[in-house]
Amino acid sequence: MGINWYIALPFGITMKKGVKYLYIIAILLVAIVSLTACKTPYTPPPITAVSNYLVVEGLIDITDSTYINLSRTVSINNPSTVKPELKATVTIENNLGGSYPLTELGNGVYAAAPLNLSASNQYHLRIKISNGEQYASDFVPTSVSPPIDSISWKATASTLNIYANTHDPNNATRYYRWDFTEEWEFHSNYDSYEISNGLQIINRLPSQQIYFCYTGDVSNNITLGNSAGLSSDVISQQLINTIPSTAEKIGMEYSILVKQYALTKDAYDYWNLLKTNTEQLGSIFDAQPSSTIGNIHSLSNPAEVVIGYISAGTIATQRIFIHKSQLPNWQTAPFYPLCETDSLDCCPPCLRCGIGTTCQFVNYLCTGSPGAPAFQGPLTQLIPIDPITPVGTLAAAPECVDCTLRGHTTVPPYWK
Image (tube, rainbow, N blue to C red; front, side, top):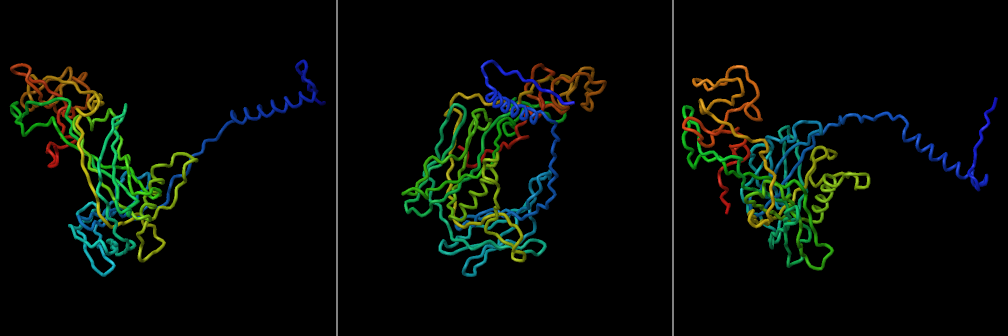
């Protein structure tokens, strides 16, 4: 028995137009059903490909010390991010047969003291790893970097931006790369004026201060610039680093050492491709990953993948300092949001005691059934800060008092 469908068309709509509207409605219904239909989640298979490629990083510096880093790539699910290549033999060679060995410093770093190499020669690296396999980079000409004209900075509403400016009057460089090291002064949450010698609390000497410290970091982005399309070889206001206004590193005094490298066109293309593959991939509309190999090859297995590009030349450097007094009245985010003080009344060096515990004077331990802790944080020995009574002193957790847990108290030799 057939089913009769009756469709009432709105007044004024003919059958021909009605069919058109019904067709549109049908398409919408199909789209809705498709969107609301059950979906089976897709779990991609784990990456099982072997990832143990040799990575070679560094520059053959013709006027200063040369440092070469050798390491191996690791899979993305490996908890270790660094796998140094140890016990290798690394040598610089020139196109005239000269040879200059590097010394292993440890952790995959190989170095040579200043060699004062000729800028008119070409150079490459020869590497022999512990299993006997050998590698070599292509011979490359030297690229002498012009001086850095200046390092400038600008404070915006929410960031501190740092720029590099340079030029080559001979119009011979054209292709540039920059990286940097940075260091800053910071302080702990509390300044400790006392210290325990194990038996009693005594005044802390200036040489024992743990309030002011220094720490640092290195750049982790690839910064490139070129003047290939300009009539003059000039780079102006090249952005080197951006620091949020809330960062602790600009809360007191900050210093950055900018390093500038001159590149050949081939080296620039390598670094540009590496930058694209590592920093600019985020959607299907971005450039897709490309093979990033470089100029280093296995001498026994030409098909083996080796990552890195070895250049030869010089490095131009310039350092600047920025004090908080030069910046807007920014409020840097506190590193110690949960710090609170407690008192050490019965025994100065005892462990943190909670409600329901007793501090034993003999061995400085908390005994009994602990209740709520005196303040937040892991159970740890307190550091005295300042006396509050004849028999007691104010104290806090080490992470709130001891800045050496995150830095060092030695003032860098170049610090202003």
